[in-house]
Length: 474
Ligand code: FAD
Image (cartoon, rainbow, N blue to C red; front, top):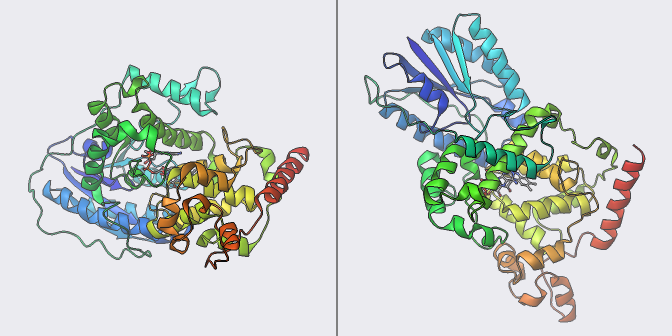
């Protein structure tokens, strides 16, 4: 028999449910397939840095699979619709008997997979899908009577109760099959999507890169996570998001590694705080499955559809380029533009600034983030933006508006992070780093740095008015 594993955002051999299931029958020939869909990726705003990370990880994966006697094939077509035909033809050519894949949860992906299953069932190929990219399947953590939770804290509590009852198991990498290792590899080209180099020290590609970072993080830094995670100048977070987004690492591997070093992680120990972030990831994906409108650019809170956003290209460009005149916002945007990654606290500050200081539609920012982020993940990005824009479930209330200057003072007190990304402010003393224009004026200095593009106090008022008008109109 021939078993095919269709790999997508599960680019690993360890703890991969579909791959594991495909290999269970020792006698079967197991092959794997990756299908690039550049047209669809363009529509989904995949960042060129993420594409480069995937391309590198795919090469590494191909080698690991070959060592185990599993050939990774590569196909390219434009869109998901075409992928249905591509997969079907490939299965016919290879005389596939059974087809294995791990679910993806956004709407286009689900529709594509349903179409693939229909096409393969018509050819008498059995299909098996797996909930692999999450700790617990969507829909499995619900409140007694009301279905999916809309608020995070009770969701998280129920989630942990479920984990206490039973932990999701990790499965091992497949053993070497007959004929291993393979010596000839299929070409993984054309990978016809713009790619951009990324910092491989910060984001070592492939599952070995992810596993090494996970081990290191769970040994020590995770204990200090609670105290350090809000300060962007500290290397206080795991930087594992790209691995979770592309599936070079599974959340189960994160959970079990955490519990190995910190057996109290489920019991509100210090390391629970990090686990809780992984549960945020679950929350946003479970929400997206329960409310597919979230995949269609819709806000969770209906009346916020009526907010009159401002179209202003000059302001948008200043925000994108890190030229707003608010140092913490600008340093953050330049970090993202350079690295394809931004610290979580800064994602909150910059998103809030776009929406609540510039009154620009959150979807514009969501899209810009997606195009830059190496860790771009639809559910997490949408959830983060709707949180910041006060349009989401359990989001910041609309009248809570970050003051970008005081946020900077709180989370980058001495301006060390700011100076790292804004060299033009290197001579500004610590005490003035959050209002460098005032310092320059007082001291008759010339700075190569813009004046604030909006006055926060006025902008705040304008935004409150816009949200209140929308609410009253509903
Ligand atoms: P850690 O602090 O070490 O957290 C561990 C893991 O938990 C992360 O790798 C991530 O997988 C998950 N996680 C942490 N915080 C969140 C969160 N708030 N929501 C969902 N998952 C979370 N995360 C993405 O993975 N992709 C995105 O496209 C994305 N866009 C965002 C946009 C906005 C506006 C905001 C406010 C947040 C966004 N996040 C996104 C969430 C978060 O900022 C990143 O996951 C985190 O900064 C990644 O760094 P880390 O791996 O060091 O995180």
